Image 1 (cartoon, one colour):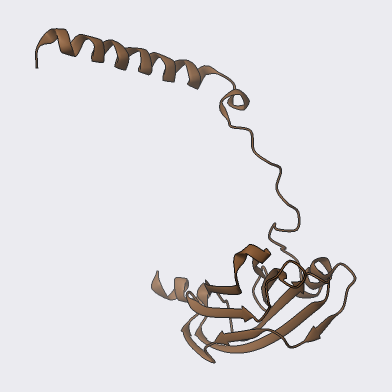
Image 2: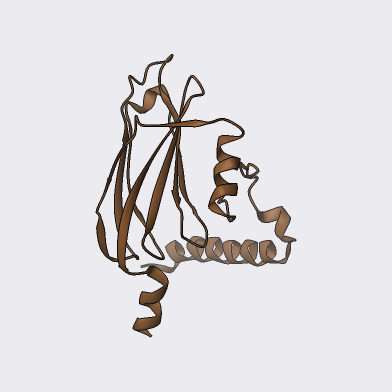
Length: 170
């Protein structure tokens, strides 16, 4: 490539490098993008399962039913346990699922996940994988648009817990 075509590119790269060096000298607060504060309802709850349930329900009571949980009854390893949750709902502006919480009752941190839905979600269905430390019950809580709470539990037997498998491997 002729030199007269390389010179503008070299100048551009030099300026880009100088800008990068200048940005690294600035205080870190100046270079970070503005972010929204974390939503306290969606942050992991690292307490006992009972305390976590009280924080999620915020004084409300839940009724059993209305949630379909598909979870294998036996898992070879706690590292990857697939779960599928479906909450039947019309998903209209007046009747829809607002949020779904998953709690692993015997994990050191029982909160596993929270999912929020809107009427435009189409259906309230979640497929994910859990990391489980031991044989335990999985609790699923769902809040509907009329502020009613529903729950369902499912028991899973874990052959090798997630923490144990790492110890065995190394």
